[in-house]
Image 1 (tube, rainbow, N blue to C red):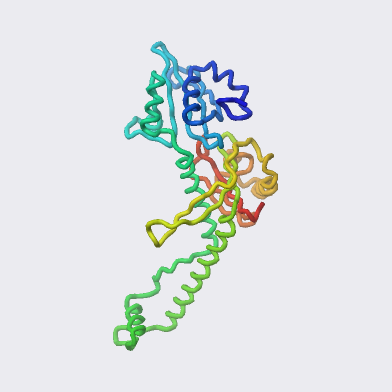
Image 2: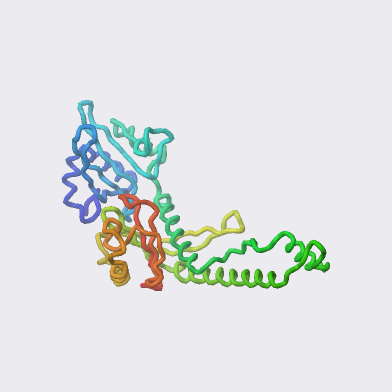
Length: 321
């Protein structure tokens, strides 16, 4: 088992040890528990000189940052970049997301002082928002449960209030149309029914342990089992979702370790064959698509183009495994 790299990457440790970036990888690994999950060779756009960029993640595989070193006549420049941090000023997003120094202790001090390295909870936050979007799409498939009263004019509302308080509902200016009232009542009762159906369906599918499977731009998979619950907020009129990790994330090249997911993935791949360009399918079966696939009762969601940090996701309700 490699001290600095994920399982399966042991052969790259010798390359890492010989790299100018090794002291930075070592320090980030020691202080924050991160490991290298991917090595990417890039060429400088200024002089074409090649370097290795080391992508690092928490032990459960959640990606956090990339680090690298550049050497010139003046010495070694150490670099740390992460989408979970941004300086207030910078020439572009890459500059704002990057901290660097020719002195390693100075860079490590900046990481600590500015709380640059995110907690697992902070890395999880955008994932939870993404899964919420998928669940919201699923709930929407049951229909509209809005009780907007576009069909009720102020005059009708006036007549209804007059009637409720014991007065005559009709007057020369305000006439209570009981047929319209009946239609509105039917609409409201349908909305209540749809709202209850949504609530029960979401609870059945996602308030018990279910799988989330993410695929990145290099077709690596992140798999976990989570459970959603609604918790109270200071605003008593709404609740917010919270995800409990039932089985922690694992970074894997394929689903061999998850035999209960393989049939779903296989059926999904077969049923969507030819529907997407090959460049829009990641990890072998997850499309870059926001959709509820009713026939298979799975959900796909993607908020960003998949890269090393952001993935396209499939949610598999517990009833499907």
